[in-house]
Each structure stands twice: as C-alpha cells, then as structure tokens.
Amino acid sequence: MKSGALMKDPREAAGGWLRDYLTALEIALAAARRNTKKAMGWLGPVQILPYRGFGNEQRQSLKGRVLERKEVGSPKADHPWWKNLMNMYRRFATNEIPGVRVRARFYDQVCEAVTDAKGYFDVEFGAGDQLDGDRLWHNVELELVDRVVKNQGEVKALGRLLVPPRHSAFGIISDVDDTILETHATDFWKTARITFLRNARTRMPLPGVAAFYQALHLGPDGGMKNPVFYVSSSAWNLYDLLADFLDLNDLPPGPLLLQALGFANNKLIHPGHGHKLEKIGRIMATYPEMPFLLIGDSGQKDPELYLQAVEEHPGRIPAVYIREVAGKADNERLKQFEIEFERHGVSMLAIRDTAEASRDAFNRGLIAATSVADIQLEAAEDMERPPA
Image 1 (tube, rainbow, N blue to C red):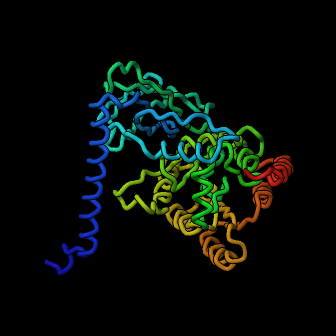
Image 2 (image 1 turned 90 degrees about the vertical axis):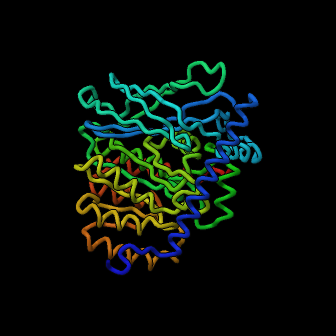
Image 3 (image 1 turned 30 degrees about the horizontal axis):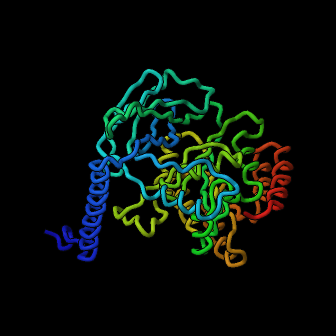
C-alpha cells in the first residue's frame, strides 16, 4: 500500500468530524424548537417560498423552501431602523419544514420533491415541446402535499422560471454587493449597518446600473431579451429583499443564485465566495452555445473567480467588467489582472462608473447608441438622490 494513499490530514479529519457534529446539532436544535412549537400549538401557518428558476429548451429547474410564515411586509421608505432590524431578524430566525412533499406543475408536467433538513426542495422538468420560444418567463404552480399544522388548508405558490428565447445573443452574470447596490463590503461595520438597518427601498443602487443592465438585456436592437443572472455570496434568507430591490429599482428580473448558511461546508460565520464559481459553471453548462459577460467588483474575489471561469470556459466570455471600489489601492492589482485576462483573449475593463462601461459595451455592439446617453443621464440623477 502506498504511504499516504489512504491517509488523511489529522487536522482535516478532526475539522470534518467537528463540522459534522455541529451540523447534526444545528439540525437537532431546529427540530426540537419546531416540534415544541407544534406541540404547543404555536407553529404558525406555513408557506412555500419559490426562488426564480431557469433552464433551456430541454431541461428546466426551480428551487424553493417551505417555512413557517413570518410576515415581513412591503418595504417602506419611512420605516425606522428598528423595524428594518426586526424584519431582518425574522428572515434569519426561520422555522424550516423538513420532510414534506411539494408538488410542482409546469405546463402538463407534474413532479414532486421532498424538502431537506433545511426546508429546501428542487424540482426539475423537461417541457421543451410546450415552451413558447419567444417568452422569457414561464409559471410553475407549487402546492404543499402534506399537512404540517391543524386547519392548514391549501398552501400554494406561483414560481417563475426563465428560459431564454432563441434570439437571445448573450447572457449577463452579475455580482450583487458593490456591483449593483451599495454595500461597502470591504468595511464590516458599514456593511452591517446597511444590511441590517435598511430595506429594499432604502438600499441605494449604484449610479446608472439599472439603465445599463436594461440596455444589455435588450441588446443593440432593443428586442433581444438577453438573460441576466445575479450570483451572490448572500444567504437565501435575503432572497425577498434582493428580489424586491431589483423590482423597485427597475433592474431586469433574473434568477438570484445565493447560498445556504450553516455549519455544513464551513458556511456559518464566513460563507466564502467559491460557490459563485460553481454557480457560474452551472449557468454556462445550461447554455453551452451562449457567450456571457461577467460583471463584478474589486472589493472581494470577483477578479480571481472570473479569471478562473475564463480558464475553465475558454472562448465563452468575451469581456469582464470589474468596478473599482478601493480607489488607487486597486490600480496595480487590477492592471495585473488585465494582463492575465488578455493572455486568455478576454478583455477585462476596470471601471470607475457605469458610463465608462456603457461606452465600452456600445463599442462592442452590445447596446444601442441611444442607451449610452440614457445611462449617463440616469447615473447623474442617481448621484443626486439624497442618501437614505
């Protein structure tokens, strides 16, 4: 037997054991809390929370979660900080419902899925022959099969699933924090204040980003419906806030690919960003013939992750836009990345504002000429908006 062939690093083995133990403990405590509430009659109505799905003409998938309903309400501009904080607490203090069946109907296809220990479920379809080739979004009807609480009644939800039309020319994969909305991810205390004390209506979009993404979505002739995907290291618990933010700020709707937090996979305190690369790979594998623009920022690991994506998907990514968030401190680092991207035949543009990105996109034939002026006008108006 070769030495080391079956040997594991003792520290890795110990870390894996501890992680498995904490994961099991986390699940057991959640089950005890849920069962106690159920026994006392305190477990409230349950809900199905669908996340926007996506697919191609052969295969489509949608993810969701079954939870005890906790009313967060619509975000208001005049909500005080303490109300926003309480709503954020409700998002994370969830009572997930494991082991229940969810029935999904997509056109004439019906399938069932069982929720996992965290209440998540995934459904898949193959409804290619029934898809309207010109539609971007399709509805998925969801229904809870099993009874969770007394007098439950029907528990239904309507999900949405994206299938790009045949005339889509390219796709857009975008980061979220400090790419489309102001987060200050490099400053922990600023990030915490913005995340916990504001809401979807008082979170600030970066200047001109909505007009820029709409221009990319519609393409140079204004009718392409190019799909937009938002990939973030944020938790699924923030899904409703981010979806509301997209809608309220007129950004193109698109699937939000987030991640589950917990002890499993070391994602409790520091979620990391490696999952974003896996999500990018999944998107590109779903559309093997489609080129993709990647848009991110320099504050986290987007340049490194996007460079790896370029290496793993040669010829699929014509351009990368990286928003500078650290000023002069970013210059040398981003210059090195520009050289590395260029070696792979990919143009990486470090941008200071959306207007700069729009001019480059127009030169590449990605957006209409009229869109450049519209983006510059919106950026100027956004910069004059009073801070929340």
